[in-house]
Amino acid sequence: MTLKELRQQRSMKATRGKAATTEYNALVEKTERTAEEEAKITALETELSALETDVAELDAKIAAKEAADRRAGLFASTSAGAAARTVSEPNPETTGGFRSLAEFSVAVRNASVDHVVDPRLAALPGNSHESSGTSGEGYLIPAEFRQSIMELVFDGSDLLNMVTPEPTSSNVVRVLRDETTPWGSSGVQANWRAEGSQMTPSKLDTKGSDVRLHELYAFVVATDELISDAPRLNDRLTRQAARAIRWKASDAIMWGDGVGKPLGFMASPALVTVAKESGQAADTLVAANVANMFSRILPGNISNAAWVANPDVIPQLVTMQLGNQPIWTPPASGFQNAPGGFLLGRPIVLSEHADTLGDLGDIVLLDPAGYYAITKQGGGIDFASSIHLYFDYGAQAFRWTFRMGGQPHLSAPVTPARSTATKSHFVALAARA
Image 1 (tube, rainbow, N blue to C red):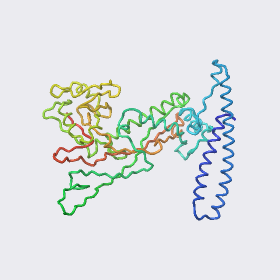
Image 2 (cartoon, helix red, strand yellow):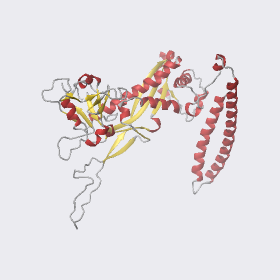
Image 3 (cartoon, rainbow, N blue to C red):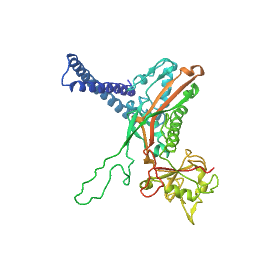
Image 4 (cartoon, helix red, strand yellow):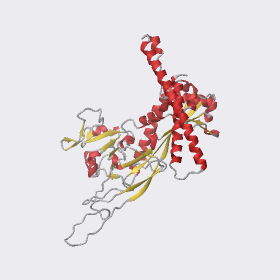
C-alpha cells in the first residue's frame, strides 16, 4: 500500500471517528436516555475503540513508510534519475490527495464523462457528490483549493478588499444602526443641570435593517482539449474565475442597486454629491471640486479616507494647484504602495470601477469603514461541474458560486451641528457634461 493510500485511509477513519465522537458525546450528556439510546452508546463505544486501534495502526504504517522514504532519499544517488523518483505527497486532509485544482477537475470530468471514479473522489472528507436529472454531477472542492480561490478573490487593491467583508454563517444579517449625533435631539444626550434639579433621561436610538447575502457566479465552459491540458485548465479555473468574481463583487460595492446584489454606495441615499463649479467646462476636474469634496467627508473619518478615481482623471490631477501649491503629490516612498499618489494628503486608488472623466463617479472620496459587507463563512466559494448541457460539444461546464451582501452603514447623510452642508462616508462629484 502506498503512502498516499495509507493517508487516505487514515483520513477516512479520522472523519468517521470525529462524527462518532460527536454523536457519542451528545448521547452521554443527556440526563435521561431510552433503551435504544443506551444501546447506541454501547455500539459507539465499540466502534470508537476499533477506530482508535485502526488509526494507531495506520499512523505506525505511515511513520514506517515515511521513514523508509526518507532513508531511500538520504542514500539515493543525486543523479537526475534519483531525483525523478522523489515523490511529493499532498495532504489528503486538505487536498483529498490531489496535487492541484486542475488534477481534481480532470478527475471530476472523468467521473462524469467516462464514469470512471477516481478513488480519491470517493475518499474525500465531507464528499457531497450529487446527481439529479439535468443538474449534472458535482463534488465538494477540497478545502485547500477552495482557500486558494478565496485568496485570489481577495488579492489586490480593490473595493472588495477595502471594505473588509465580515464572515457569517447566516443568509441574512440584522444590522442595528445608530445614526444619532451628539448635537441632535435623539439618542444618548448630555445636558447641563442646575443644582438640585432632576436629570432628563435619554436612551439609545437604533434602527434595524437586514443585509442579505446574494449569489454571484462564474460559469466556465471548457473543451475536452483544454481539460486534457491541466496547467491551462488550472489557470482558467482559479485565476480567471477569481478575477471575474472579484471584479463583479467590487463593482456591486460601488454601483449595485440592491436588487439581487449588494447596495452600492453610489446608489445609496447616504451618498453626498458635490455640485460642479459655475461655468465649469465639460469633462474637467478643478481644484475647487476636490476642496469641496474634502469638506463633505465626515470629519472623524478623514484619516481613513481614500480617493477612488478612474485613471482618466490623472492628467488633470497631477497639475492641479490651489494658489501656487500643488494638491497632488507623488508618494515619498515611490509609486509601489500608492501608484496614484496622494490628493490633499489622502491616497488615490486608481480603479476601473470609477466612471470616465466628467461623469458622476469619476472620482469619489470614501471611508471604507462606512460600508458593511458580509460573505459566507468558511470560504463562501462552492464549485460544481456538469457535462449534460454540453455533452455533444465535447465540453464540460464548471460553476463557481460566491455569496456576499453589503450596504452603507448610513441611511442618509449626516447634518452637522452648525452647517447645512451634509456629510457622509461617501462623497462624489456631480457630472460635468
